[in-house]
Image (cartoon, rainbow, N blue to C red; front, top):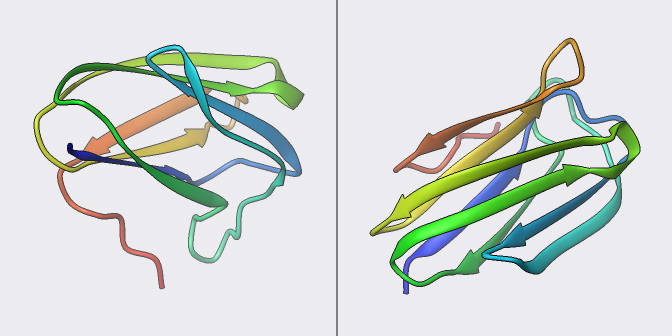
Length: 100
């Protein structure tokens, strides 16, 4: 089963974050805050079946939600941020994100 790695990057400030993968809750954490020097707030990993995977991210404290459909065949890395307007954005990579 391929690995799905989700990293919370920029814009988080003591937020409650919930992530569902294909409808099942796989992550819930309060107090998520970005370390601005390295653009990192938190992360988690889970194994998923190959094929279409729906990742739903909710930032409860900011009333933001995003659905991210992914065609997963191998390890996939998703970076999730809140932009300057408080909206969720994401980036997808085949390589791990670097944190110093």
